[in-house]
Image 1 (cartoon, helix red, strand yellow):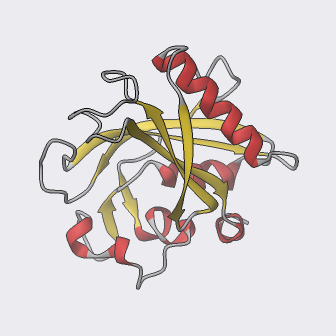
Image 2: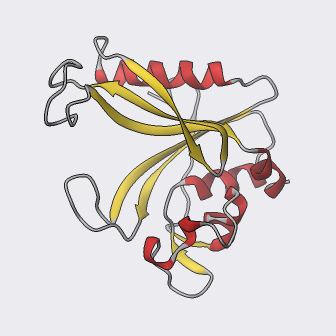
Amino acid sequence: IFVEMGFRVELGPEVETEFYNFEALNTPKDHPARDLQDTFYITDDILLRTQTSPVQIRVMQLTPPPLQMISPGVVYRRDAADMTHLPMFLQVEGLMVGSDVTFGHLKGVLIEFARQMFGEGRSTRFRPHYFPFTEPSAEMDISCGICAGKGCRSCKGVGWLEILGCGMVHPNVFKAVG
């Protein structure tokens, strides 16, 4: 879906430094996401990546704008296994950088992705959220496909399923990549 929309696929290492996994993504040393319980550290500075976002840092260091890329891959977090969490899972990171890119473009791309991925009959919504590497930030939900948004066990009775986080690249991230 994303390739058809002009995005290229970029891959990156699963073993990262703190710079790529945290610092360049506007997550300072005292941020809770850097807690040893949340991350699998190999040494004091080397860890298993907690997200595919480090790939966007590497791509932006090497590629001047405009650019559109996605980065699918395995990520690792020290989560207790339950119905919605595992310590290893797949994630897809998307990035679109250009002088005229707006939050409207972001929403348009994601709504089109949801339409193609989940079908015409699903509603979408964006809720404000916080991520250190985006500003403004949002969570995107789709209406539950089991109960058609009425509420059931699968959607915890709310009619919506959270599918992704998103936002505009934070200015500090652009500073970190030069």
